[in-house]
Length: 469
Ligand SMILES: Cc1cc2nc3c(=O)[nH]c(=O)nc-3n(C[C@H](O)[C@H](O)[C@H](O)COP(=O)(O)O)c2cc1C
Image 1 (tube, helix red, strand yellow):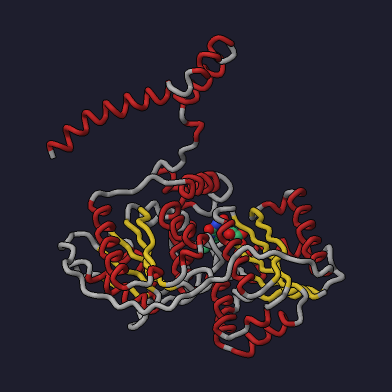
Image 2 (cartoon, protein in one colour):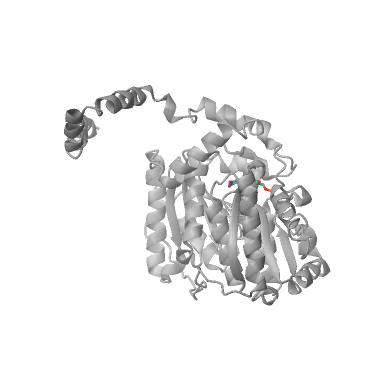
């Protein structure tokens, strides 16, 4: 059988993930393996039709296609996403239709599930038959058990293709809708504010819903709102994964990106990200923005900002993307995720009202420095970063280490001495049956009563302050 591996790492042959593929390949020399560096060569594939066609010819003659990538910013690298975008743009979906497929990725397991869900959904949209996906920790190659898992994964992949087994579909096709937004001017604009508000977009084309939403959003305020179009910034390419920024946040690229990010985006109080749904994500241009902003490494660079999303297209059918966008604002940036506004309501008057309310809410939260507490996406994400940066990846991400140390992000549970002593004594005391019975009998009421009395006392004091202000 012929297996085509689509290498999604911008590092090409130096990809970590491809080393896993190379390893497992050795157990199946009976098959013909072709590894194509589609992410590394993305500029060539974009520019030269013959190069792209050559990749399509390889896929056409393949029995199975394996997608291989290192995770970048909760999804696949922008160059890989661009490759997937090109498949539609160049009308090559039929090449993939019916092909058996699988995914292998390496990462630190930080939002690897969203990357896999994105790619599986894309495969299903291409009509491919999805067999399985495997996400490995980047350094797990030393572990015998993991190498065994890799072999089982591959054996199952090949067996499924050989037997032409039935596969399942998890993601319904996206339904796009026809709606031409006709905005009206607001009756009243929001009063002038000192807060800096910017809109970041990947395509402010007059006439489309997104640009009309952007304009209507701008009109909500009396302030002048700056619109930054990613297409107007000199961005020489996607993140190459070189990790040179790890020492002091200095990017390898010499283009306008860093300056725009630091001096025009980071200086804002309210940031509205505006984009159009493309497949199972926004555009690859947006992904390039997210990847390139990684010159700030794992350090949150939009701390305390209010972040909202203005999206044109069927985002309500894409909960994976909703999770990615929320996680980016919260766990990656320590910002306030205000929400996502979409044109799916398909009614101009209602959309006007929603935009007006959204604009007010963004400002309201900003004026009060409101950052809602992190949910699982943030709390869980933080713990992954904290442990990784403290441990195995610190020697690369030294700037992160300095930031995490300075900002109390190394909040390991073992440092909580009060809780540790409390636990120690309670564990001892609970060995006494009488104490244990009483403790567990009171568990329902005791903590709640304590909470109630603390909150009542706090309310008494704070009400006085609120009334006085
Ligand atoms: C720009 C960039 C972004 C990354 N983002 C993530 C991420 O969101 N989640 C994660 O678990 N690992 C992330 N990583 C770590 C990579 O996934 C990991 O190093 C992977 O092994 C790289 O694979 P490759 O060498 O095949 O490209 C990121 C690395 C880089 C350079």
